[in-house]
Image (cartoon, rainbow, N blue to C red):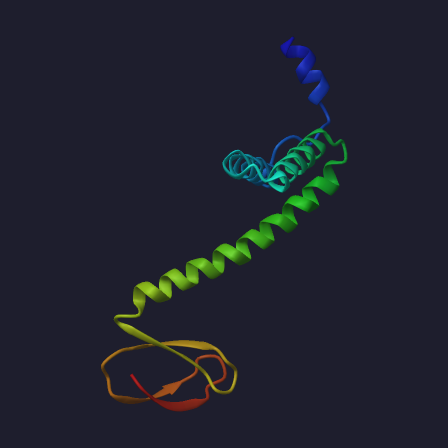
Length: 131
């Protein structure tokens, strides 16, 4: 039996990060459906499961690989912004953050230094701000 499954899956794409996301989304929407009995959640869960199995059973590995890369790029943009926001919130007690008026580069300056002249490391423009 195990060998038959191995032969069936040979040459197929299988699971990846996007597939794990689709399965998680299906589980969450099924739980929402069980709580609310709103049929849209059931249809969304069903669509996620169908999409997952379509991707996992596909023999066009190059297309599925490209889809996964696009998903990972999107995920990294979102998580990168969240990480940056978290870092800013953690550092707000000891640093102030300013944007350069010329190039809009974010600059971190220690708090409590009074009025200081800040030089942008990117465009070398100088501006005065209170730290």
